[in-house]
Amino acid sequence: MDWRTHEIENQVNELVDYDLFSTDAALVEAVARVGGDWFANTLGDYGAELGRTETWRMAADANRLTPELERYDARGRRIDQVSFHPSWHAILELYRNRGLVSLPFRDELRGRWGAWVAGFYLHGQIEAGTLCPATMTQAAIPLLQKEPALWATVGDKLYSDRYDPRDLPIRDKASIWIGMGMTEKQGGSDVRSNTTAATPVGVGGRGGEYLLRGHKWFFSVPTSDAHLVVAKTPDGSPSCFFVPRYRPDGSRNAIRVQRLKEKVGNRSNASSEVEFEDAWGVLMGEPGRGIPTIIEMAGYTRLNCVVGSAAMLRQALVQALAYTRKRRAFGRALADQPLMRAVLADLALESEAALVLAMRLAEAFEAGDDPAQRAWKRIMTPAAKFWVCKRAVEACGEAMEALGGNGYVEPGVMGRFYREAPVNSIWEGSGNVMCLDVIRAMAREPESATALLDDLAPSGGGEAPIRAELAALRDLLTGDPEVLEGRGRRIAQRLVLVAQAALLRERAPSFVADGFIATRFAPDWGRVIGGIDPAGLDVEPLLARAFPT
Image (cartoon, rainbow, N blue to C red):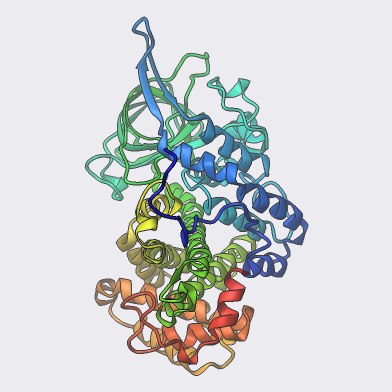
């Protein structure tokens, strides 16, 4: 057609083609602060590569053209083959090639956990589904290191930075991925209610062979080279098993994929339902110690959930800022409108608070096991998972609204992030499970709770609202555990907010810490993002720091 009805103007595309690392002042500072400077060049290269238009396109393709299950080949042989779009492999390869899968565990370099957080955080701003196999594989490493016979066969393949997507026995692979099989139909988070049975082949015991019969309602990434699976030994106690995709003789293990889950988000990643028809596995640890094994693994995976949600929160902020600075309404840019500035400032405070908390958790995972560091890992990690994951859901919704109808339609990145955001609140324990974990950890280890609050006090710099909140938390924790359980969400929220306030006072510019403390401890804060009084905030430097114009 050689005619048109109007000129297209004042339309703003979602942000692509930018360097995720160098434009994030808080992240650059955090990496240096924890001693991760040696990884900064890699992060800089990775941030630039992730921000390329082509990488964004691959992320969109991987989520639009989702995994497909082929149960049988052309001649009726059962193959249970899951096919992914090439973009899935390309993006997963980017992550593995940067050494991020095993970075925290394969050496003792100072700042390795913070360096890993930064890489995971950058990747999660572009595509989150690929971080599922990355998380499970990473979290399996410290567990497998405790099993000498198994580690001898898989250690070098877990440490490998070479991406190997071939469907072959572990012995023939350059690198491998590990999945998880914990939950069943009847139990969900209540793993003790599992019914999958493990029968020993011979004497059994630690390192012994077993045959597993039963099912898993969520079996993540069924193409993984092996899964860690919870099943009950003959005495009825839950134990943890290493169940490879192939048996030692090279034949396919008897794990039958029933179907792939049709999920709200996380669509690039394959989650499945499976049945075990006497699947071969090896017992990890002592019989009946499956729950402690899960708890240890969950400590790592929950940290990943915190970082992944902080990443989505960050990208929501960046997209909202980039869009509103260029989109005009009522004679000026949206970002110059007072009410929009309140929303953007609130998002900026939320984002930096999530990052500083994630980095402090990383420091605890790298440090020794003194009471304070143990408390950060055992108490603050589930609290942070509860809070940061919840805030990411709301932030993604607000950022979508900042783009208006353009944010709600496909194609576009905001719809994908909005669908993705809830998964981290659900995976590895829902919000209520996290809060119960916080309360019970405090009840079992009151000295750790005290150590945590003591550790936060100096960071607050004598700030009156922080002092008052720490004192109130100390009083609360002396109460009846059963009463506290019902207040679990309030306690977890308050614990995270006071930690974020103290950390920002210690580590962020004063205008960030001042803004966070002034808003988060206001009596009417928290009902909706942007429901703050920006009059007392240094909004301009806050937004400039969040993302440069």
